[in-house]
Image (cartoon, rainbow over all chains, first blue to last red; front, side, top):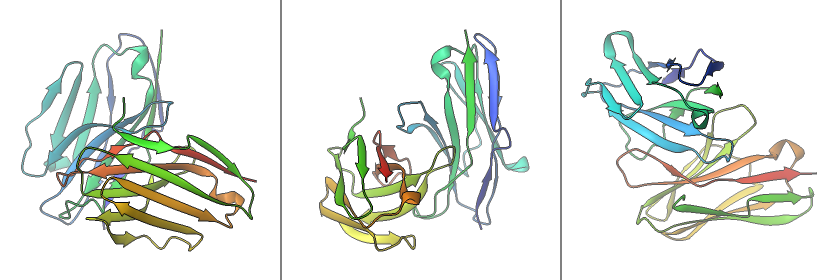
Length: 116
Length: 111
């Protein structure tokens, strides 16, 4: 069984603070894919990043960075110097060997509020 | 701007009505999906079409009927819905590399 846990339900920070969103996953697959999506108030989920289980390199994209650690089954997401526009619900997701995503499981989501 | 377009953005219907939600993508993706999302919950998979054939049906009630007329279009036909079916219905497509591209959703209210 696959499971994604986002223990932080809501986080509130002040603009320019750094914030880390936690994601812990469970899977028995040796090949799997991890994702982060952003859902702003408009409703559309926006794809941010995909990581496969064989690539443990951390990634940085502008103010966003991701820390993938297989040893702790975690795929955490850090926003540096947060901005009001970062306010959204962020979902971590896990997909197994089927690339058609029919087994993609989303975490419960973390609502991030960035105050000016 | 999203490349997955959903219409209508908002829909209010009675329990005896028949309505349809529509989704269109022009990215050449061969897989399309319907998800249901209740407030403050993650999206839940309803249907998956792969190469225009229904490949996954997550035990969704028959009052929801999907249709994929061609590789760019996806419909969700609604009939005799219940108030608990009120939710945001999200369409997505994928190119087989894993990531999903979502539309902005159709917010459905059943009275």
